[in-house]
Image (cartoon, rainbow, N blue to C red; front, top):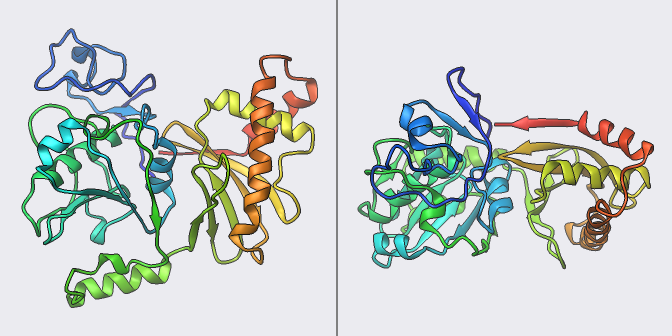
Length: 327
């Protein structure tokens, strides 16, 4: 899901992994959003601040970007921190790629809390919107739904990083349809049934490419062709330089039946994309992806040992020209 930046919004980079200050912050303290600015010069101004890397500091950052941007149907339980556990009183919580009606959160009749990632956010900090939605879901009554997350959901700033264990990975379950949207009794309303049918008709089959050293690598069938979308954790400059080194050495593809086509930026990370032979099963790409991961690791390590060659600089310019940014 993309989001246009309003003219009045300011862009903030920097470390967004700092814990939020509970309650109303001191104006001279660092802003809880993690921008590195003082609160009075950041969110304390009342302006919308765009946090470019909202999931920084979380071990699941790459998978969160994937769930937010292109994974159609998935659920992942979250490991709540002490603060989150105090709010939930034993309630379980799961992140969802998208919920019925693109809701921000809902609580099922059995008390399970679900928070959607593919929603229209209300602020420039997706992590803050998700944090508010998760806090709401951990305390709301069973059967309630939160249409849109944003301001007005409790006192004081809160981010996803404040409610979950930061070094806990996500155990993601991917689905081929949205049958998990159905209520416990399996009897949806006519409106819910129509929404379910529409969602199932437009879903793109997506699977994780699993293997040694592989994380956040997703095989996607777009209908006419298949792709590998691989969310990478490295800083963009380093990753581009390493990819350029592989490109100059003719090692950027994943082997026969693949072609590197470019990359897109999403929430501060770079997502390289390859076209794949659609007739090959997703498991057939495990070996090639593992081999590429090894080459990429070597290329990243070599950046400190030797500067880029002229051919690698040209390759980097070419790769940079094949990037787009999602906001």
